[in-house]
Length: 100
Image 1 (cartoon, rainbow, N blue to C red):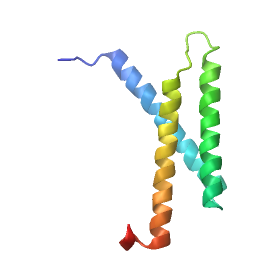
Image 2 (image 1 turned 90 degrees about the vertical axis):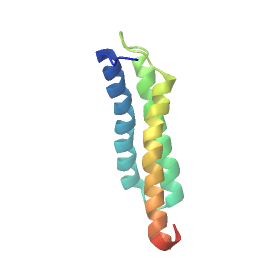
Image 3 (image 1 turned 45 degrees about the horizontal axis):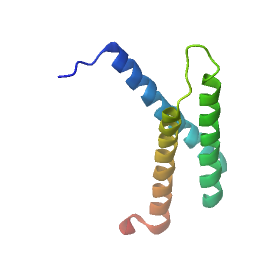
């Protein structure tokens, strides 16, 4: 049986924060670029990816921090979840809820 330690909780909170922060970032970017579906998909997702890469790169130069590829993946999973959710809602509205 595995006991959850304080360190485990800290890691869980930090990793969850990656997903939530980039979910909010994606929502903000979508609201700015929603005129054309193809344009906002590419623009919003690429901006989130750029921020994630810059954030992890900066952390590599901060004492006591480390930039990790896994954190970029977590960041982008949050962004992608919101992107898929917004796309799903738009499709439901466009085609009517009976088709989806």
